Length: 596
Image: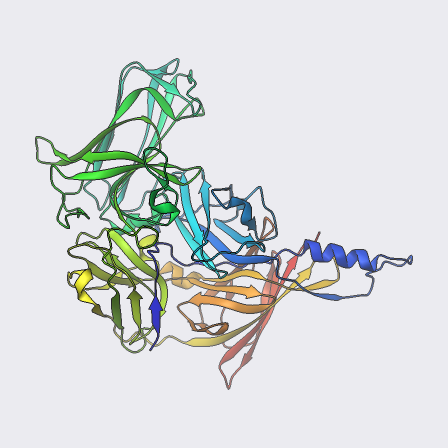
């Protein structure tokens, strides 16, 4: 039996890509040594094998993906800002410490070797991006040890929002940057009952981030409303559910900089531009009205929200990932009995109605009682799953994500939120960032402070697919120099067939000096650097890597129980040798990179 222990709320789910690590320093030193004396080229007829040294720590993969899995439009290449307390310790794979750029939605990062992340001294930084056609993104990342971390960020596409969100794009007239008054209404999106309204008073002057007037004739608004009770919107919540950079109304750090766990009643992202300039302030306050789902759980009372309840309001600065208290909002009922949260603001950002609880730092809202979740999934159903604690109305409370479990395993939450009732849900890997994956089972409601243990049973014997065991030998080669490399970085395989039927398509590997150090995926077992990889024979796969601002990929190939070659394509080549007695494919992969 295997036990998984989670020490804090983690809404971050797992995905990995490979990138060949920085070799510039090693190559420079090598070539300088070889260049002493002689007219003949010092490296002529010489092939060097370079074993890169440990120049980085704590590899981090950030994957930006469309939160709507049915949309064909994915984030591609864009600039990324790294800010926050420990931003100076962050680098791209390849060594760059500035000019961060994502490619094909992937951003491989790591910490500088002088970083020393630990539970008592975590490394914290913020990742933010403005992707054309998508709502602004920000995520706080906290690193507590030198191991692989995977951060998946769901992006809301304005044209095709996922279930559980609503989008309004609107254009309003201005006179030299002054509004004659406007009302912006967001109707309920699919899978939600929440609505929102923003009222701009007549005579309101648009102001930029420096409170300077913006004199133009048109206001463009992009507004996103996120349901608090829809699991399909969770992964796209700006900032995530476990922020560390949280301050009160006076600017004082909340909980001493340790993470707090948000329990949301609704979130509204408001972005406006005038003549291409971002509008950040107004000469007169806007009135914001958010209609709530009446089946939202009040974390303090444990009951459905009602008129007279109060909920804290927080605003998010996307550039820094900082949440700031905006005071409390008292819930009211309108003439039709709808529950409304109404407030005024003179600045724009994401506004989140959130209760909160914390385990570390200055703990509150927790009863310090462990909860053991026993998994009963039957033979043949081992794999990667998410185990999540939710309110009775499906609001996110805590989670253990991307856990490899088989029948009889347990997941332990050392401390749980102090709430009257909750439930545990087990779902396909990454449900809250991939609404195409189903909830497999959920428990009855229980009191987490007194329960102690809960059982989850799911699974039927699957059809018998044909698997092949896979061993990887990964090498690097300088395309412009006679130098071979033992690469370190991220690698992944994408199963095109699985993706078509909304199954998890990813197999992820992190390589250190040519040896697999971490591996994740539904076909992977083992741990501690010793992994067994089984992939679907007959499915078609791609292979990818991103390093030093360059993207590499293989051609589409079929994973088959036979010898075959990778078609040469964009820097990745390889051969596969099949061994029938062990039903194994020994795949030799070479990444051809341009060395400086």
